[in-house]
Length: 146
Length: 259
Image 1 (cartoon, rainbow over the protein chains, first blue to last red):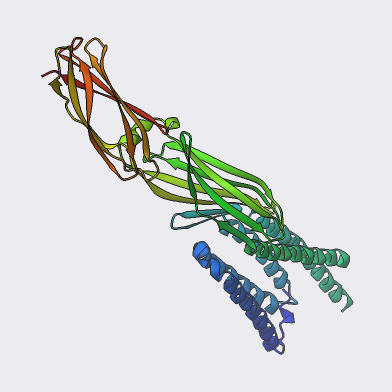
Image 2: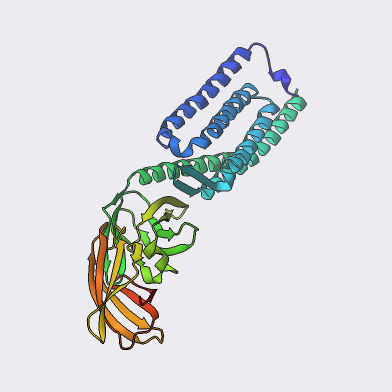
């Protein structure tokens, strides 16, 4: 479906664009890790989760850009939003962060932020679904005109 | 459709901007909170030992600190709660400098079976807990636990068998050796040691009072002389010793037999 849009001529350009987006995500990851470096002692157990999250987002960024102009883009966007929602819920233990260092324990309730992330991604899912419908509508219109 | 998509796009952008700005201002505010904890002061107040911990919270951030609750809990080795003190600050507003005192007050008489702790050294578990609601959206709790050694003020209390020396036909002198070590770093023992010598029928046949002054980590080892009325004396009886200080009173009895 819509793979006809995948002309070999613009394939390198797509890969370049997708690569740049993935690199931007990687740079964001580097900045984020620099910012949280001081807190590594407290959130050490969450570092692998952050790594996996950014890796997944970078892959999604690459694939979404690579498949732009096709229906796969919307499917990937939908998947990315769902991934962010479930990953945040699981990684943040439902919004309660419990970190221990030696004999000190800190419990942070981040449910508000989790709620915000879920809300934003739900809006994103709605937008993606509507965009996909719009995309298919425009495609079918093009076919009729042709 | 396009308008709806555009509206959703802007809604997403606005929500991300709101979340991002909220995170940035919250992190900035947290980094600008300065907490200074002074040296704890030990105050002996009537029957209480009070550890007073001064602190100053300088909230130079953008958000208030709500329901700041500092709790100190002291538990014995089995986990039994001996004392619990809390300090609540309902609100530290943004830009406010809030001095506070967290007092931990210990009254030995209020502790169940406190007499055990007068005679035996042990370790107490001290748990500190600070809970607050930052900006009304981030409740958090910080807990610390440590061990506090407890030194018994009457450690190794030892009362010797009494010896008697006749003075005249109706009275004799009783010699009684009392020794102990004050292991408590907090309590200087200032008070009296009252001695009552009782015969088999419970009648008092001799009374003595000794002023004791034993600072921390000092040993008390004295031989006490008590005048005993031999006219009422029986073959055996009991000696009642009562330690009376401002912090506690401790009573013990030892049997005796006339030689």
